[in-house]
Image (tube, rainbow over all chains, first blue to last red; front, side, top):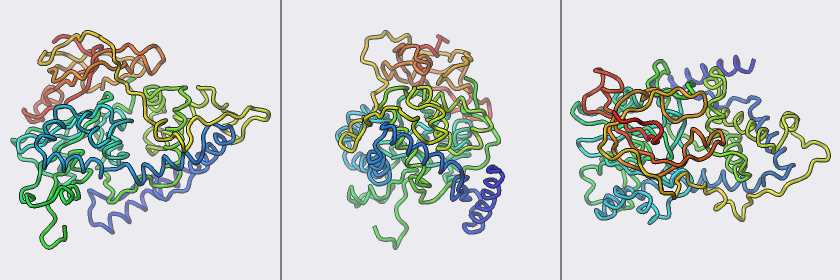
Length: 231
Length: 218
């Protein structure tokens, strides 16, 4: 019964999203969005049991949620990339030994102990995926978005990376080499995107503001803001 | 195991559903569940590989029907029960069994930052690498019924060792508590044509991290 209701709601959400955005490829549908179901009660009941048994401290749970909602996220990775763009020696360290260069920013720890930074150039484009689950460099990018963990991305990133990139609006020239990194082990990957032409005058901070999560996964390039936009 | 989680190269999964300005958690329960999963790990009743394998054990229809965090709910409950931290009856009722003792949470706000730093899977032990950078290798054609991180699309395919990452514990044994079996992990470059045939561009490649036990000389 729950499934039927969910399917109905998913269809409704899909239709609404497609109409509102006129962007069918990026229709905003999520089967867990706004759907009240037993999972809410199940998780609430689980937490209350674990607290009653003294297995978890609810305040510690608050702290974890707060950390990932407000402290750890793609701004961390963007700071590192912007610094690599303005400091060639740092960039060299970052590419040669990711973990020690990232530690200069204080980044490391869970799901980021062994991070490799791979560089995009006019000849080479890198793309990161985890076909088996959802491995992702948490300390640098936060928790992965739903699409990164979803079957469409995980299945196609390795067999049709150029098609996947086209869905993100990125068309690569035929002679560019595409390197897909499948995170099957405890190594984590971060893409060092190309610095956009025309950004020579920008400060490190202004550069960091341009660098998106998607560019550091490899599904986008970094672009300058459109003319007239404020930096 | 040859499960639906191993989906590299599958067709028919549909378009990528991109959400602009996506929140970290889409509902409060996702955040609570994520945090419980992290904090409960401090009881050291399971390891990361066992957690991943628990999700792989979901029946395929459930795996696809559930959202990402819904899979985690089922996985966490199974691990809690198997680890002896709570009984299935307690989980179903939501109440501790009468007369059961109360534990002291290992993770509190005072130590949450350090308690959540996972013990790295890297192992500081001397193990000789079986392969060298630049060497041609073939991924073994194995089909273990248990946990493995060797994706099906790479099995029996040939590639080149691109770099040696050093020594890490081996998930195929660690997930089943059969020992860490530390060994070298390499980044292996597979040409896209080797994996997918002529439909792929000749210069494109997939880099896959592989343990020594997954490889043989080509």
